[in-house]
Image 1 (spheres, helix red, strand yellow):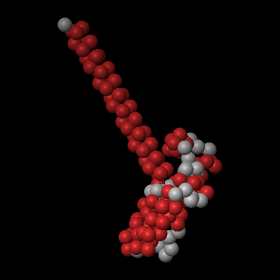
Image 2 (image 1 turned 30 degrees about the vertical axis):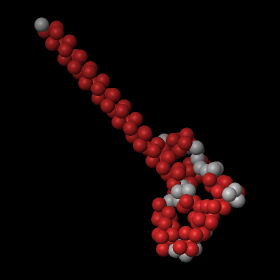
Image 3 (image 1 turned 90 degrees about the vertical axis):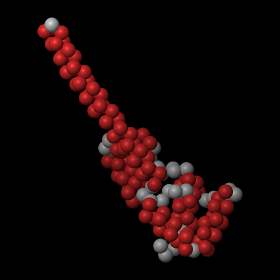
Image 4 (image 1 turned 90 degrees about the horizontal axis):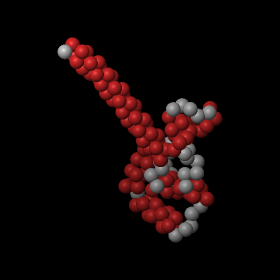
Length: 140
């Protein structure tokens, strides 16, 4: 990465970058002590209250879709315009926070699906066992 912006450094510190960009910045930070110092100064400035509107915007995740909207995205139930935005936010912007939320929702949905399959399997097993026991009792 030829030049790393202050915004990218702060986003790196807040773990808001996609994996490739974060890895690139981390590698540069390991090699360049002046970049580490710059990051430290930025963090101290932010901690002292001297932050920009852009930083407030990013830190507050103002552009991030809500969790319920991410659920609708996962179910492909968003209107076209909003679907385009969420796709852009996840794939082009590469918001790590929203990507993690989406993965969490996918895992939860898969878990619910497995629970539903287990429940259906138990009901079928019970139904077949109950029928078998009824037939066995009537034979006696």
